Image 1 (cartoon, helix red, strand yellow):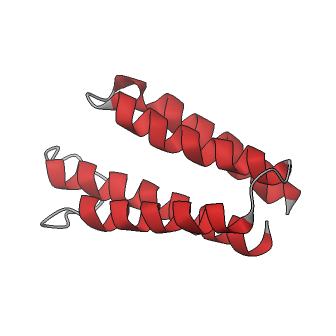
Image 2 (tube, one colour):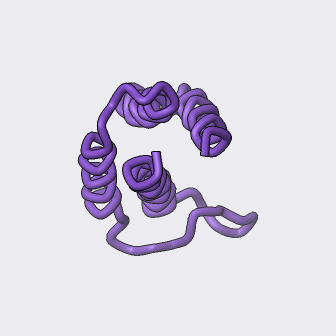
Length: 109
């Protein structure tokens, strides 16, 4: 379980780094940094399980609210133009990953 926490903690730090060129980078760096911090706090056993469940619920709510009005996938191919729907789907997917990891940390962390 410790390896799971380390891998996802580092992955969330990497997600934060990838947001540096985003127009709304402050928001997304904060969101992924909280997830990375939660992984660290779980490794150190400094937060009770209910904190992770609250974070999971917040990430689920964010993922639902961020879901695009029209799903166009998460990748753009050669013939497909960049779309806000693709960006919103990616953001929603990232929040969903955070939610799943937080739920795992709450259950088995």
